[in-house]
Amino acid sequence: MVMKQLETYKNNRITTASGPNLTLMLYNGCIKCIQQALRDVEQNHFESKNKHIQKAQNIITELMLTLDTNIPISKQFLSLYEFAHYQLQQGNIHHDKQLIEEALDVIVEFRDTWKEAITTQTSTYVQGKQI
Image (tube, rainbow, N blue to C red):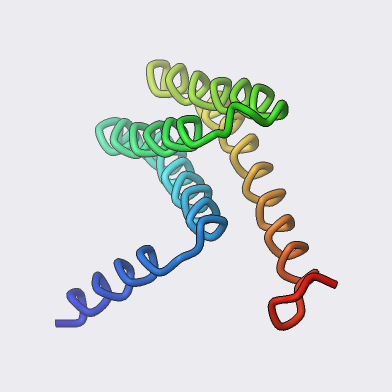
């Protein structure tokens, strides 16, 4: 019963989230998967590591696909996403924590910057009006 309620809560949270908050959720989900993959490497749980890295790669792919290519900085974002994706791939193949950690660093930086941007954007509005 509790698990069903938790799943319903998670689904409602996702379906009612704004675009910026959905992106933040993607970053957080990606970070969570990468962190679990790092724990899996330490414990030699290679099947689980592979599963978590693939989930993280799928999230990064989604972030890449949603980039607005009309914005010049998107090309730089794309390069960083490709780098993180590649590091995860190589880290997965070689069971290399350092490569996986490099990908994690990139995604954490994106997440932290995105979170700050959301906070700044929200604080510039008072009762729906920009100040």
